[in-house]
Length: 95
Image 1 (cartoon, helix red, strand yellow):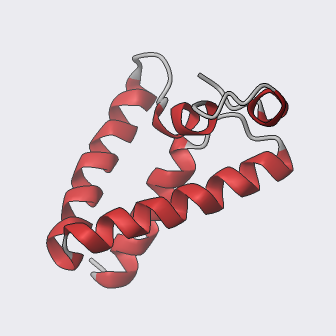
Image 2 (cartoon, rainbow, N blue to C red):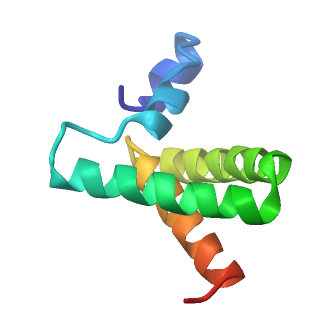
C-alpha cells in the first residue's frame, strides 16, 4: 500500500502513489477520525465549490503531496490530503 517511489518508476508500479493516498491505516481511532474529517470537510468543500472544482482540487493536492512525499520519503500521504482539505475548508468558511 505504501509508495515506494523507486519501484514506482523502475518497475512501472504506477498504482503505488494512488494507493498511498487512499490508505488510512489499520482500523483504529486515528482511522475513524481521518474518515470523519474526510467525509465532513470533503462534503463541505464539494457543496461550496461544486463537484468539478473538488475533483480538480483533489488531483492538484494529490500531485503536490505525492511529489513532496517522494522528495522527503513519506510513504503514506492520505493524512496530508485530509489536512489539505481541512485547511482549505477553514480558509473558505472559518468557524
